[in-house]
Image (cartoon, rainbow, N blue to C red; front, side, top):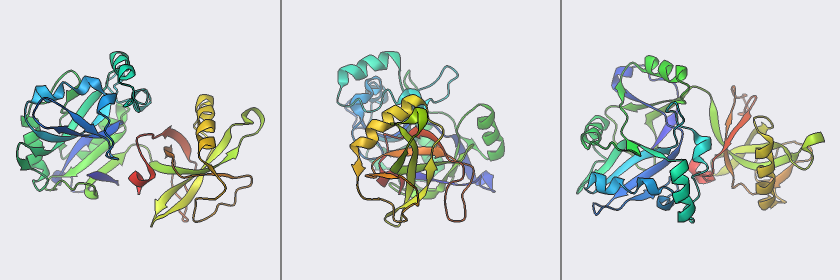
Length: 307
């Protein structure tokens, strides 16, 4: 179940508020035999990348399917996606994953229970699922169930802003769990405006950026097509530009992937495979992003994930 971007709900006494985590979403399958299976939003098995979470199976000791977010915490206890990136993608290298677990451990933040024992809870209201989840007592060295607050949304959002957190997820108290649906029953409220975008092209840099991308041309899926939404040329480090130069070469194509071809001189096209996140101020009436700045690459997402 996915959240829909939006403002704080007005009748906030009908909603619960959870801190929005900045990590990798995961469904946690616990068959009850002590084993653990982790799947990303795409359905990919990511269990091997996070060996420190293997202890959750014997810790719970019963069959369950849980929903949560895998994060790396900074010294202040805030999720740090940049540090998490060093842990992602290590499913094919168990030895390296084990070494990284010792130096950059992850933490699994659990916020929902979808199945418990022989019972499916997808049709159970949020408040009841939350009571079941908290009753499981899932607290450990690498996993926890943070509390949720009912009502007081404005105060909760201000708390996240002052603490340097990304924002809130508002969840309607009566809502059911809707697998695979981007639902209005879950609203994500961010302290900054961000958008997931697909890279469809780039423009070569000049001067000291010669040989590197000067700007990325990005779009968003719409009605089965990729719609151009802007050019992103700021917010990168030189190291990120260099890394992107190699990625872009791997996906080079002669065909523009956007349904509305941007009038950009010197544009070079790539197959729409890379997903990133940008920050921006607002949108034009035509839907273009104003003052977009690169925020991060999202290797955990595919273009289908943001449709």
